[in-house]
Length: 420
Image (cartoon, rainbow, N blue to C red; front, top):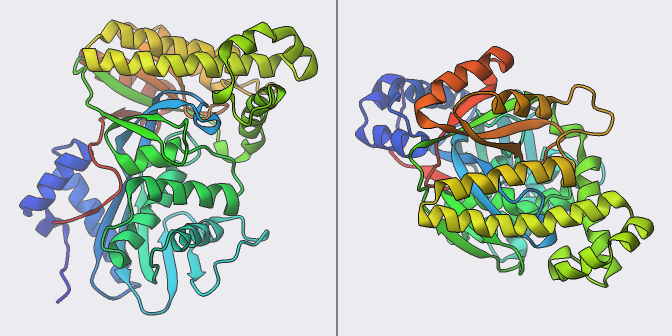
């Protein structure tokens, strides 16, 4: 017998109340009851069958800016905004996904071939399925209706949230939960790299899949070392500001960072910078500048020193050294601005991220601030005295609007089915 979900029934459901607290760090049950009930109503208006809800978080990159694609180190966390799906299995061998504000996805599972004219969400879903089949897992048809407050193109990984969401749906419906968190992330990266043709690293998908705070070392990217870390600074609030602009047309700028870092590695006969001795990079600065470019050298220096900052930030969290942690975050921001050079594109006169950072630094109570995610457009990450977080929120809302300023909590769980 199909369960029916209304806002009233969910508000009285003790398991739902508990899920809201765990997933969103919120006591506003009414808000989330309405969100889930509205999604259920829209889904069942178009699709039949028993339903399951799935939640896939956004992520923040605490430290480790543009390191994962060169086998580096990152410190990332799942956060309390999500892509939410209402899902029912079908017998049509089709994956149908209706996402508010986006074209519907319709993938016939009998053809998972990669096509150059399908570099879109359909292709992305096909790539996910193809990789899971390669891993020896089962796939099958389902209908899903999704809604998301993981804002698109602004650095909190709306794409990774969607990708890992689809893999977890396939995991629960057809594989009895046997697909590991790492495999879900790897399949998601493969789909984005090969079928969507975006040269992303693995950090976003790993953070979304793992949940909580994760220190990840990608030296062996087939078997990354993962350290689960508990947030240790209750006096610090985390605020993300969507500064404006959109990542979606900046693929060339992101690709250039990876290409330039790898060109420095190739200068020393290596595929990735992780396998080049830092002393060699510094010693050969003038040759790298003349043979490749000065910017490539600076980006290589950022990479080397950012890996060290990740280690230092992890150690600071584990030891409760708040001042030491904030020092590393501020240093990461300065390095991203000056060496990595991803605060804005060369021709960008608006400079949305530098403006937001300048405003944040002039607010009493901001302890650390840096570009967040890929950069060039998108978001800024700030660590703020918890006692002043609402004042800072209002300060930034005046410039960016309430829909673009988020006070966030760390979410313990990665992408998962929500049971209640």
